[in-house]
Length: 491
Image (cartoon, rainbow, N blue to C red; front, side, top):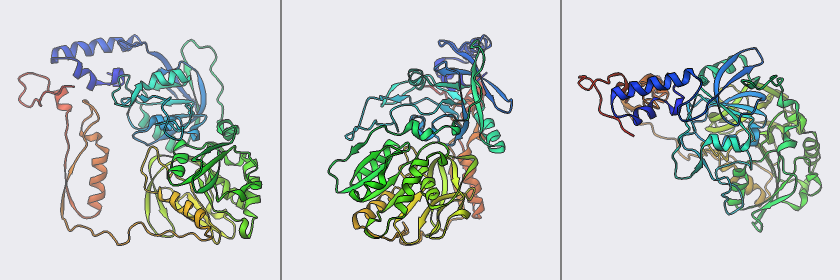
């Protein structure tokens, strides 16, 4: 049985009262799948087609809209609403590695915070071209949810695919690199040609068309170049005391920088070399001397643009770094942070000119994660300190930038977050409480986090015992009088 039908076997078990009824409903669902229908919902057959000829049959949710773009994957476990509205995903077919998606629905897009920014979303619309998941849950439950993921995507005209083994698809992308793909629907005529979104100026598509001001009256005045800026970046800058003037990507900010305390360069999608107008403005700013010099902080694409303006070169990564668990090392302090990321390009460290050096490095692939100037208050982060979603290990970088703006300092200081080294507890044996499967039918071997905990602890020379809840026995030992039958599980 395909697990993505109506949220999988866990929901099915909750809906039936007896093992006999369970088997009856299972047969009904299997017959429905054979006919191409999901009980209670109309499912449309669709196919994910890759540029290398690979074809992945699936079923659609969201909008019935053929689309073409770049297929990428993200390893985040939560935050699909934030990811889909992140402008850095513009033009991409987003694959989520977490197996069950949609179970907590989508909040009200019209709800805004005190700054006029949408809560739970990173821009005013879905930016990704499509969403691909293994198990889409049509039923959702969350105090903040207003609608289902599929309904929201349909309203926005964005297609989704379910029923694809996204772990297998991710392994293919890791082995062969990100590639172009398209979604085809039965009976929709000629398929769309493969189209590379990186051949377009994606930044021009997502940047604000007008100047906007947030946090009016705050003491530190920052001009932020919008190359696809996320809402939470604006929110965090304002919360930390900045009046943020957001300007279009091709705005001539070099002419007005003297009116501000600092310059912020935002995240954004696509090939950084296409942002020629921004790069030319940055070249003029980097030539400033004396009192004209203002602190600069760039995030994601902002890192790449500043480096390109300085004379470095950018390269396209094989499959990019996207997710919420990327380890990054601070070259100055040796600290390692867990960071959220979303980029397909990186700066080649070996091309950094004199006066510039690497500040952060990805601990997985060794790619550049940030740069800094030797004598001026310019620094960047390829990752996302604002998170949303993801860990906030590096949110202090906003404080550092604003402190530089306020004090008009010309030097960067990275104090270690821990004043004293952590003391390791003296233990020889550890009990790990495993997470178990995500649903009935997923046994203990799917406890990835438990397996990784065992691996890490054994590397430290410790004896490990993993206690893993395996509720799959409820499914397999269904007889009323079976000796090893587990307790009844209900919704």
